[in-house]
Length: 490
Image (cartoon, rainbow, N blue to C red; front, top):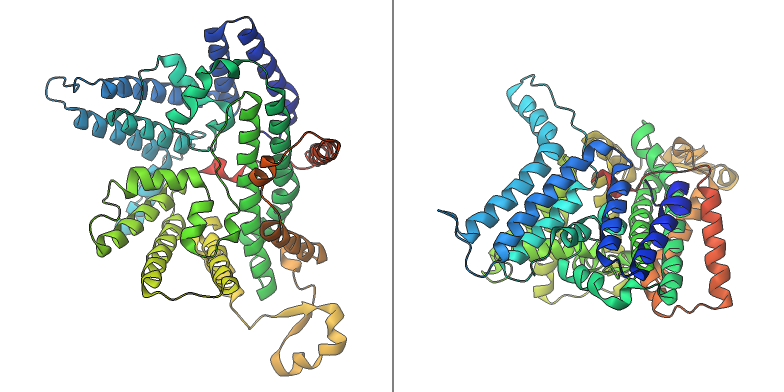
């Protein structure tokens, strides 16, 4: 079930909302929690009910281990120390994730190296497995550190399955969620939170179905369908995906935060205008913030962080971001994307130590273009698709200018072999593509993001009209387009 679907917006959400608060109104607290867990599992199972046993077994396994790790007496069963139990649990989670996500990738590479013919398993990736695995690993580590309380299974299940953040995050900590569900005042309807939630949800819905899905058309044509691209088509392709990914994932996160607010739950901010960043470190403080936090707290710092010398810092950064790349997908393009970002962070750290500073506009330009180029590898299904787009972005051998310039610049044909015609025809683009790209730059650079807008939100006439318009326009747009969120594939 998609957030951007009629069955979710007009059936699942209102039914879940009213029954949950009705049960709380009748002081049936445990029943309300149970109903919310049941609703979340129903929401999860909508795609494929065969995924359900996987998430249920994962939750039960991690709940039992987490409770054992949380005991203060040192938990020793036979020869197993708490540390051994933690390592066993983490490895088990990684094996489960790896089996479904990386087995075919491993088999393909073994076949490539050995010239073998081992058949792939063609396993379907269980929905949200990357997210709920990371979330539960963080719970296990925090339990080992004695930073969790002993919850019953119902509370733990609610922490893992709460439907607004179940499928694609934000990746939350137990300490951010469980106290909120326990608060008595959060069990009654809060009309300010409802208004704020609908405001944030509507903006996220608009980002997804109106903006992201518009850019998706040109990105898909350029990466997956067009066999050749000229320089303008290549740049339009890469920028379209750069904007599609941002508005798709930040739209999902806005919708998740808005939905959680309807239930009086505040999820952590996951985006803070990342394309305004003026260096790569600044970008990762703004982009997918909860993933950055996980990578830092549970990979970078355990590897040694910045405590063991400069060279070790560089290797830790590289390892962390290569792991981050692999987490996103089973493919060498994802590995290389992670490598690029790790290398950029190493270079930025070394550059900063030299004391050099760039003009702000130049620093932004370099940072944005690096991010845009790196996204090419993130998006490409195959290595050749990335090469096709990148080679065309920097090739001067195939330049096509718009027809209306031919009368004044016709001399360029004879001297520089520059052609005139439909200059972005291979991606089914036109003047509307250029307008949308300009619109994308204006939005990311000059407008406040959703969280900034929500700080000053008031339920006045203007905001009611604004919410109503973008919600109505989004609903109408869903008639012709209904696509999954990009991070559902990770």
